[in-house]
Image (tube, rainbow, N blue to C red; front, side):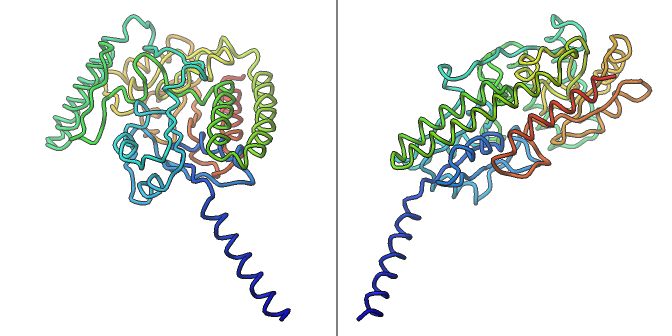
Length: 358
């Protein structure tokens, strides 16, 4: 009888374990910094799934079948929004009705958004002209290659680029697999918001609210995790602030304008960008102007990005004394998990300090 009872108990235990597993909340994020912050909040309860992998960019990522399946199984989906991760827009609209989608770009009540800016080579008033010059250079390069496919892509980029230059509403070009040149800006709002630690804290708070509402049984755990995560973020902010103190006047150039939130938090001085858009390769004219800018305006450092061609930065600094370094807004070289966000911001602080320092 004891063995029979033990077997029955074992079956019951396994059934309950299976039930708990089946009821586990399925949470999906779009990019790794959000995944990392969320993993801190869900620790001990569930492990979120992320879409855009290391060494990929949300600007040009193509959704895979496994990604689509993860989305279909999701209870909660956290993304910045269609103006950053345009590749997700169609899949988001086809999710089951019981899935809740949280687009950060729609939560002005939670985040301190910054307006977009036109970071030109020297004078912001010339941003409009430079936008067209960069397109024209790129268009000429494609024409010289006599590649019909490249020509079509450039034509598409030209349409989108004009929209950016005139601050028009984004138009969707589904037949090209993109949704507009200005896909990382929500109207007049810069969406690289996770690079400001205060916004990271706001995301933790928003995620905790959503998780607790969707999974009330584990709300206490989510809230306790969030409290410890907010403490870690405050400590990280103090660390970076002390590290970068005294570097406010040092001018630098970034590959594209993705770091406004970090710069604003620590008073750093971005003097320009290699490209006005990560989707458009800068032409010879812009690189020539950039090189002159580096030499004439006492630029301390120029930053490449691992998601894009570093040779462009090499060409820009050739023959100058400007130092080179790398900034990574997504943590391409970092291991997935709860520590990724903290390591990403710490690495960014280290790279700014090393390159801008004496």
